[in-house]
Amino acid sequence: MDLFKDFGKMKAVQKLEQLAQTPYSLTDPTSLPPERIASYRTSACGFDFLYSTQRVDKKVMQTLQELADEACLVEQFKAMKSGAIMNKIIGHESEDRPALHTACRDIFTQTPCASQATAEAKTQLARLQKFLTDLDKGIITNHQGQSFTTMVQVGIGGSDLGPRALYQALKPYCQHGRQACFIANVDPDDAADVLSGIDLSRTLVNVVSKSGTTLETLTNEQLVRSALTAAGLNPARHMIAVTGQGSPMDDPDQYLAAFHMYDYIGGRYSATSMVGGVTLAFALGYENFLELLRGGNAADLAGEQEDITQNLPLLMALLGIWNRNFLGYNTLAILPYSQALLRFPAHLQQCDMESNGKQVSRSGKPVSWKTGPIVWGEPGTNGQHAFYQLLHQGTEIVPAEFIGFRSSQYQQDIVVNNSTSQQKLLANMLAQSLALAAGRPAANPNKSFSGNRPNSLLIADQLTPYSMGALLALYEHKITMQGFCWNINSFDQEGVQLGKMLANRILSELAEKKENTQLPADAPELALLKAANLKNR
Image 1 (cartoon, one colour):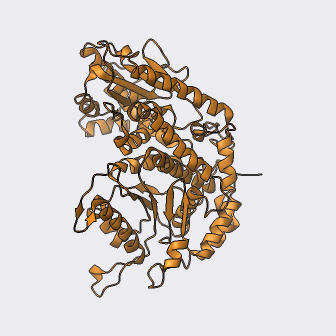
Image 2 (spheres, helix red, strand yellow):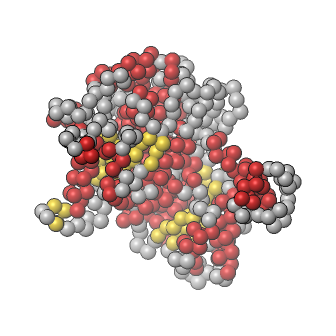
Image 3 (cartoon, one colour):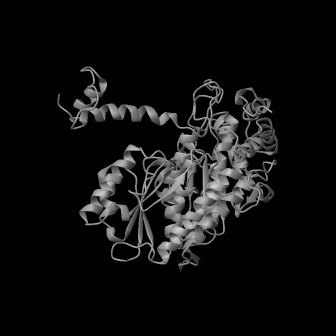
């Protein structure tokens, strides 16, 4: 079966283009009856997904199912989980390898989809468990025999955003006396700020780089090594590594311990591998990290359902495609009504835009259809007092995905005006969803709301390690399923390479010792350096 099909040639696409000429209106007084709200709902892995406020009807839903079947989306998803070569461009040089982030979570069955990758994941988990046990038992200590209380993760991109977002989300679950910090930006102020607030003598530094050659990470590593040395500490007793097997960082003389990541797991999909696992398990505890994996695995299983109304990530993906390709909306706002998810939109921004910001199909040809949207977002209710004005009355229609939880994490609340803070938070989320969808006409045009601004609600009981793992994986699968449908490679990131190359050319001019041939006198890099007053020549 040919799984790589051009989006523009599919019969369902042509049907959807016709249906998009007269999409369901959400603004009529009868547009959101109780029966619609009750039936446009699906559940999986602890989450309820409410989508009656999307501009879809039964005919659109039926045709989206036809699109999923025609594009073989579930078959592609299962093939990915089983280790098929999904990271490739046919006929052109590419990474040409599997995308097996799900294997990290497929550890709870005797028959994993990709047995070798899951065996490797189990090996790393066993090493991590032993490392944590040695820390707990005082076998591994600092030079004074004291325990380590802080772990600083040094990495960038997928080695930072996902793990940082998960740690931020699950801080209430931290073990007593444990914390994590993150250094990513090559801006020296980032590292200086983190290092100034911790006790280096009781800190482990976790350097994360698959290749062991990432310039920003190596620079920050050297900065941290210098800080440790200046404090009279031996870096080799305070530093661990997460890297590719055999990389320059896979060196027991330089690191207290080294854990491995693998080529078949892309950076932005690596938070449930050792990339996130080491720091998260240190701070949250090994059992809580396993709960995160269980939640992710539940979402992995949910993605195998053929019926789109029973397959939550696939349904999210198809509604996104309806909004992007057929209704013509260019952006997507992720709006968590949970302060703990402060950094989750930033992670999704990378995961979605680096995955699906592509203009070439897997056949190596330019696409003739829109691919990934611009993704952004902030927590509510803060956003209501910032950018929601544009969401409600701006000329750009921005589909929104709300995320909420029925209960707070800390369970510390107060009743004011007959309602708790959590109730106020959730009431605001539901109200924003209805207001965007239904709108409200008014004689005063400045007070008129046009409505028909599509959105959906994703809600669970509480933000726990399990629900966080499920939420993470639901969005990972939504993104990859959209990539499958658009027939693009969601697992490479060639678009970041040009900027890196030009940065190295500019650095060659700024370096104290010139190791490369100097740039021509008329090079734009030199002109820009001079205009920025960064170099005289």
